[in-house]
Length: 222
Image (cartoon, rainbow, N blue to C red; front, side, top):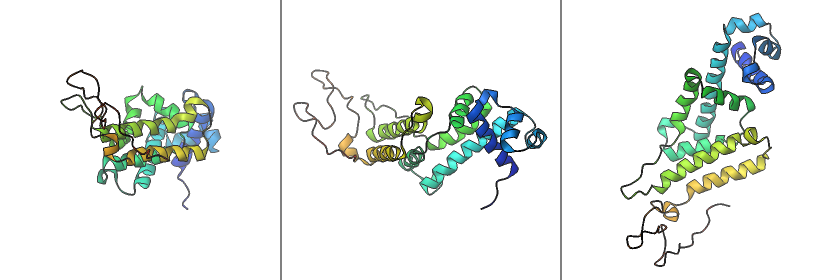
């Protein structure tokens, strides 16, 4: 297995320093100490802290996309929306590090940092559904957005709550999310239940019987 380059080793050390100190408190001295190098050795590769932080964002975003591409088994542009979301969900089984969450939050306030993450997210995020003329939404499109949001919540759960989520539970939750995506469209309804009864104006769920009762469907999740 090839040894990581000095640049990569420094970026990894900087991530560890952020885990310990927070993004705002990181310094060249802290990174050098974590990497086992001199400060001059770090500055040789990264002439300023902005360059180092920007490189960390690029490295983490690229690693994220590499993981999703590996889970997908092909390039994202060769896949369907559903296939990309499924890979996104699978990668979310691995919890976010504190450094990843802190840096992604910081990126919201810096367009250059955000660009690294946005470029990846744009390729893996399903489109926002548009309503039909009757105000209803395509159920498959809604399900992809729901699965994507659920994966985001799973990914950052530990960092945002401070609570550990055991690996076996994370695996079960991923299976549940993927199971929702595998549910046949006929079980969900082609369109959302926003349709209105013309006579009374009340919502009639898709799949409802004459009295508005929803026909039972087998639960697709284990």
